[in-house]
Image 1: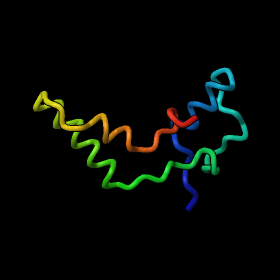
Image 2: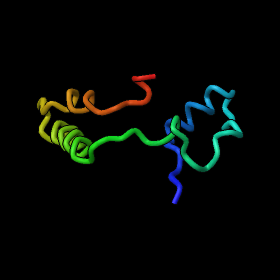
Image 3: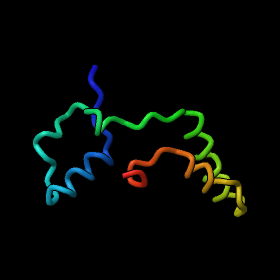
Image 4: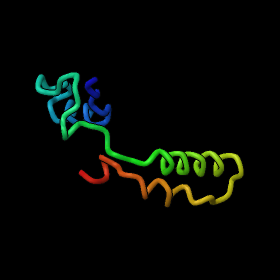
Length: 76
């Protein structure tokens, strides 16, 4: 089964094309629009730290955990 393009990559392509999704960006992911590989454990750890900071109102290292994750917008 084919994978769908990552939403952020689709939005970026539309933004570069005056707000309209380019025709070449179909319903199947390409190398450019496929999801960035990320360990589920790293995403879960970052999310847990964000939630703990919100509840406990103290630094739990969320910023560092988030920065360690791949980010299409930061890297482009």
